[in-house]
Image (cartoon, rainbow, N blue to C red; front, side, top):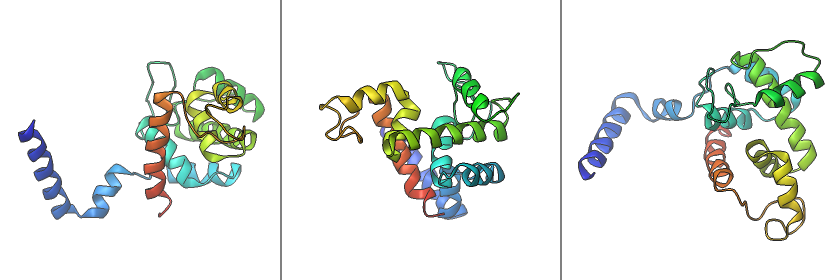
Length: 175
């Protein structure tokens, strides 16, 4: 294990010395699909940093990603959720593996969650754990003092999701 850790550190240092810090951050925090993100950000009033953070955490910018639960594409949308969103947007057909379609639907979905919950962190929790779960958490004093924000997140996966999103937001917010 020590050899692996040393090797990783040595390779990382070599990478940084050859390619520089910006290249390293560009690898960890890509900004692919700029036109699609810009369009969705403008259309639905969602900060680009949030969209990039969600895409990076959800799929690592892999447009063909499919989760074990069946979520598809860059923003990892469940097909039923995507169908509901498409109806609201009057979109007749879409492909969740198409970056434009996925980013449009995912960003609109997040914007509706943010309007519903009025708090970005709470909306991000709902994006990950589902709005029904978050609504129940907000009613429980163990998880929320004010019924609007979460002081504790009961799902480990969602707690870790928020931690990852926050790390991404720190970088993407500077771009």
